[in-house]
Image 1 (cartoon, rainbow, N blue to C red):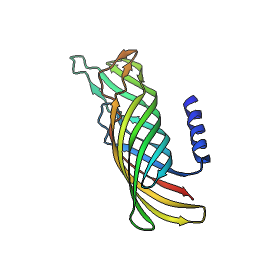
Image 2: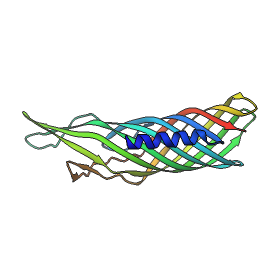
Image 3: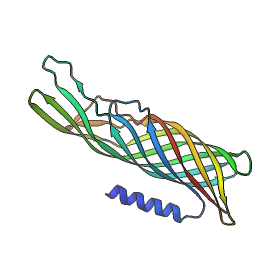
Length: 208
């Protein structure tokens, strides 16, 4: 709840500031790990343009679904395991932006930067052997990622005060500081990296 309140304050502060800002929906997929299937959520980015180059400050809210497939430890008396639950993420980021206007209504851009992920795990590891079953809490530390993304903007509304454009794009993010995971209070060797490809879409509002 504290993380959600902090996010709301950040988003309201961002919208209240004069300048350019964008709101996008993001879908993360092709995640290279043993825990997550993918994730989705929203991001607000405040953009400070300086000619074609700018700085972006962002905050978002994401959820990641776990891979719910069962697996076994391969022992003679097989124990079956399965993750259940999800992880919420409040990513706070800073980016370098580079935009090029192709004409009066079309723009392409590059967004590269880092994000610090405030992760809150609601995952359990369920195990079952014959008639016996057990469930253990999975804890995940915060993480730091680096991303590169490309965007295409198309202007669809223009007034004396602002321009509004639709934006679509995609990119890839890598873990700079892997987020250690523990199961039942013990360190786990399983890979829970946030590395993966993503696509996004939304609007950008540019004030004059």
